[in-house]
Image (cartoon, rainbow, N blue to C red; front, side, top):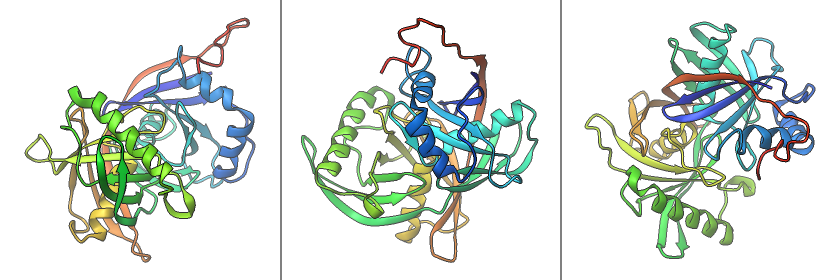
Length: 309
């Protein structure tokens, strides 16, 4: 299986270029279900140890329904599948450029949750225009063991987020174990108390925010992703959800640049406009770099050919 590895502001992406499963044709959400139901060992072989790690996000390139799109893409990680991935879309963009399939300029990707537009601004800088984002519920309180009452907004940015009003620990790298445990407790409490996104959507991303360290940034965050790993980047879908909440609260104006720091200090720049439905169309800019190009091999007799899971 031919793959290209990259990182976007520190968060890794592995793009399957060739040798992945044949999912046929049709809408990307239907092909995602075929992937899940018939070819899940490909996901585990790609992401799990010994070839991968919990922090890695995978992306399977597919033929798009609309031939004008640069590609279709299905994102996945150590525990399942993602509707959208902001840092991963940037990684796909630089990977397509690395392959010589696209050049600088505007392009489109098809994802299971809708079309994502992106601009390749240079060899490493990408701006994505995400699917419409919105705040679903404001100031939702949840009782969390060891933390007490935690209050935050529920928002959609391509994935479902609980965006806490306060962080229980300082947003620095040395506190990532404590932040991870706290975020896991919040996620479990939301599930136990049957607090969800629209139509019962599972809230599988927890976002803690606080003051930035850089004087020109506006916020610093810690994002727990599905599967228990934290996002090394500021999280593209999380930044989109955050701006949707700021827009709904009237705290950030359309067209103004928001600089979001991650817990490791990397950053995204973002801005939004409102569509006719009042949802936020967020543009997020970050930097992605190729880290490797290789062939993943499954040898006969390997007891961990499909990964350690």
